[in-house]
Structure formats: structure tokens, C-alpha cells
Length: 340
Length: 114
Ligand code: SF4
Ligand code: SF4
Image (tube, rainbow over all chains, first blue to last red):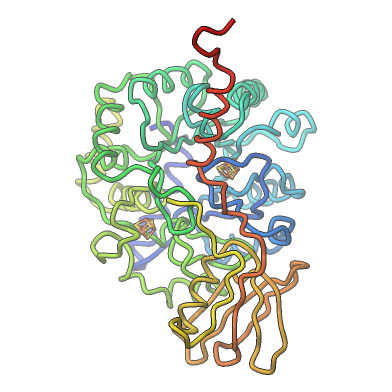
């Protein structure tokens, strides 16, 4: 794992506090979507398929901060749309850092160099750019449906690192991904100097246009096993090793949909980042009125059957790590030995 | 996945389709819809929310200016028409791959060509 010690300690303390307080459900990462606009139009992305009035709209910083305070999660991920198109992204990040939230700004990096040159952000332990990278040049440009984006992103990553920012990558793997090419990709990202990488299988959610293109569970285990077998020691992942073991089929977890709650202009999304089954007016209402028993694999819900996506299962892995001696031991062993 | 769309659909509630079903389809639809109220008034917008698990089930919309949310009770809905353009239609990964393949074929030299 490549997460800084201060972040790890914050998360560990937070999880222990929740457990001591006897809270059955608590959030770990708030998925804050200030807008749905994007400067790319990747196939398979349902996030940007809205009518014009919705794409033009965005949340105010005040509404974002109210959601952050209401939720209380120690980490805030800002996906989108493209957050660098949010006119107040500089102020929002500044406010979040001032609140000591660990911020992951998820970007396709097309605008990153320009925003860095504008001096919009200051390096901080609390801020990471999480750059969308779906593989090496050929695979990435194909996934984002535009040639040249991989090179732009690499250039922006270099610039961000040169300026002292934390940079991670986030990769969604689609059907047909090549494990050997992915291993080359991990090497390439480490050569670039990123702090860590995040990987997740794609998901067939009801509003996504390409259900058949996402990985099915069994094939996913196979793919991840081949990808992570004998991992190079220098590969650093910005996620729980237990989640990676889960992807490989070596660990069985149930989904924790409330672990990464999603807030956007529609409200608090039920039940998770992927499914849009409705919206609650407050985080409390989301926790108290969502029929959680209807989600996750054991629920028998068809929509959850093949899901292995990080926003549902990474919180389970983290909960397991800091919630049981066995989980803690397994995480430490995987981290120290470098073996998954 | 096909590139089928509900764009232009104007179901008659009660004739083979229930109000709840039409609301669910409208909720899943990615374009604007027009809701016809019991008094005949029409309201256009993006229907982003619906809740049936409350004593008075409702839908919520943002109008074409982005103003809202506007709440309408199920009991006050006479019809829903799928009037707005469907931004999801034809924008699938499969469609993009097909287009890419066609482009590639068009630029490849044909057998025996110069
Ligand atoms: S960059 Fe992200 S938000 Fe934008 S279209 Fe691609 S996947 Fe969707
Ligand atoms: S398994 Fe969890 S994360 Fe996946 S779709 Fe179901 S509720 Fe969402």
C-alpha cells in the first residue's frame, strides 16, 4: 500500500471510533459530484448522459461543504463529470483541505496542466490528483474515445509531480483487458513516479449504455489473478491489499454500499455510486430509509450479482482490516511481503 | 445492448402499462419528459427522482432551465410523454467501436490497390 502514514492513521482511528460507538453503518469516502459536465465523452460512461440543463448545472461550494460536514467521512473523492471544469474547484479543494479531509480529485487530466499553471492548487498531504488512466496509450485512448489523451495525461502527471503534488491513477478495467499489457502499464506508472494506483473492474449498471462490455465476476477473478500474480515489488496500490485479494477471488466480501455514499445535485444517491435508485434529501435520511437489505450479493438483487466495484467492496476491505485482528494481520502480511 | 430508445414514446396509462411502470421508465430515461397533470397542465423537465415507499408517492424534476426540484404526486399524474432527445441513444461503446472499425476499414489499402 502506498497511502501516507498520516492518512492511514486517520482512517484507522476513524474506523475504530465508529466501531467503539457501535455504529452499524458509517461512511468512509464521500463521493462528491459537483457537476456532470465533462470534456471527454467516453463510451460506457453514463455519468455524462443528461439533458443540457443538467449538464450546465453544478452544486455551489456551500452545498458541497454542507454535504461533507453532514456525512463526516474522512476522505472525499471528487469524480464527475470532470471536476476541473467546475468553476469553483480551487475554492472547494482549499476548503476541504482546511477541514483536513483527504481529497482525491478524480480527473481525466486534460485540463490539469493548465490549472496547475494557473496556480489553482497548492501541494498538500490532503490532496491527491487521481488521474483516470485505463491502460497504456492504445488502450487508454480507445477507452476515452479520443486519441492523444494518454500523452496529455502523462504530461500533466509529470507536471503535477514536479510541483510536489500527490498523484495516483485510477483504472477501470473493461472486458477484454490484457493482463500482460496491464502489468506493463503498472510498470509504466511506477516509472512515471505516481504514488500509487487504483484499479477496479467496470460495472454493468442499469443506466450505463454498455452492460455487455463490463467484466463478469468469474472472468474478473481470472483477469485480476493473472494481473497480480507475482506482483513486482515496486508496484504500489493506493487501495487495501484485501480488496485486491478480493478481486483475485482469494477473499470473499459482501458489499458495503453506504461506505462510499454519493452526493450530487439530485441529493444523496440510493444505494451507491453505481446504482441510481432514487435520492434522499439528507445523509441521515439516506442511512435510515434506504432498504439496504435489497442490495449486495446476498440480497439476490440481479443488479448486484456480478458487481465487484471498489466503491462497494473497498469499504468492506477497510472495515475488515481495522475491525478484526485477522483482517489487520492479513493486510500487514500482504503489505510487508508484497504478495497478494 | 442495443441502441434502442424511448424517445418519442407517449404511452397511454392503463392500456397495458401502469402509472408506476411509466414513472420507472421515465426515471431511467436520460432525456427530458413531459408530465401531464390531472388538470391538463403540462410540465417539461428531467425526471431525476421518484419515491413510491412514502405515504404520498412523488416524482421530482428539474425544468428545462435547470430550476427545481419540482415535486409532483403520483396521484396528480395523468400521463408522461418522452419528449426530449435521448442523450444515451447511439452513444454506446459498441456504436463507437463499430464506427472505429468502419473508419479503419475505409483507410486500409484495398487488396491490389496502389
Ligand atoms: S472522463 Fe470520466 S466522466 Fe468524463 S466521459 Fe470519461 S469516464 Fe465519463
Ligand atoms: S453490489 Fe453494492 S456497489 Fe455493487 S451495485 Fe450493488 S449496492 Fe452498488
